[in-house]
Length: 383
Image 1 (cartoon, rainbow, N blue to C red):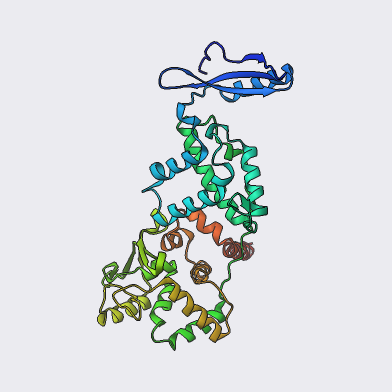
Image 2 (image 1 turned 180 degrees about the vertical axis):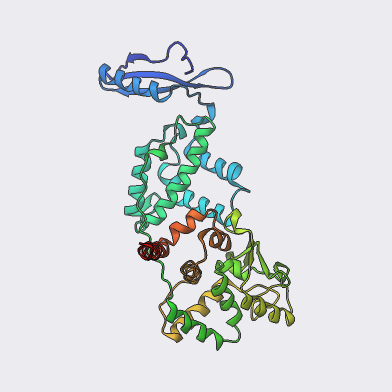
C-alpha cells in the first residue's frame, strides 16, 4: 500500500516574481521534520501538471535526510563504504579516477536527489565532445564511447545503490542510453599462423615455456605471470589460478586477486604442458613458475611479456595482435576442436558459460552450421 502523504503535500502558491511554486513531501529528517521537494512553473496549470507528475514519481518513496548531500559526496561515500573490499583495489582506483576527472567537475556539486536523466545525458554528450574539465575549462579531446560507457556503468551502479538506500526515488541512470561501444573484432591466429608462432617460440629458449603454456591453456597475462609452483600439482596434472600480477606506480609490481570470483579456478592441463612444467620444476630456483629473467625472486613483468610477444610477431611476419588475442586464439581453437562451452568457460575463468558463447559467437556460428550439415546428412541417409 502506498504511503500516505502528510498535510501540505502539493501545496501551491504564487510567488512575488509572478511564478508559481508547489511542494511535496518526499521524506523526513531524523527529528521528524518533513523533507520537501519544490516545483516551479510559469502558470498554475503547468505547475499542477508538474505536481501530479512528481507526486506519482515519489509515491511510496520515503527519502532520508542524506538525500540532500551532493553527488560528489555520495560517490565518495559509495566508493569508501560500499565498494572497498568488494572489487580489486586497481579497479577501485580506476572508478575514483573517472569520478574525479570526469563526473565531479561537471555534476559533483548538484544535490544527489535532484540528478535527472537529462543531467546524465548532458554529461555524456559533453565528455564525448570535449573530454574532461581542467581548471574550469575543457582543454582535452573528447573521450571515446568506450570510456564514457564505462563512466555510465559506474554511475548506474552508484545511483542504484542510492535508490536502494532511500536516497533517490529511482535510478536516473536507468533511463539513459549510454554511447554505443563498437566491439573491435578479435584477431585470431589461424592454423598456419599458429604453427608459425609455435615454430618461432621453439627457437626462443628463454620464453618458450611461457608462451607454450599460454597457447595451451589461455590464461590472462597477469594470471600467467602470477603462477607459483605451489599452484602446480604434477601428480594430478592440475594448475590453480588464484592471483594476478599487474604493474603499479613507480615501476612496482602488485599481486592481486583474479578478475572475477570465477577467476579462481583449478584447471586440468594438457599432457604436453604437464610434462613441460615437470621438467621446468626440476631446475626451479624460485617460487615463481615464470620468474623475471633478470630478477628471479620476482615474477615476470606483464609488460615484458607484451614486448617479447611483439618482437616474436615482428620477426615472424605475423599480424600485430595483442597478448589477450593469444587467449582468444586458444579459446577459438578449443571450441572449434569440440570443447564444450561449459568446460571452456571454467578453463577461461568466465562467470557464466553464456558469456563464453557470446564472446566466441563467431565460432559457435560455424559449429551450428556444421551441426546442421551433419544432421541433414544423417536424416538424408535414413530417408
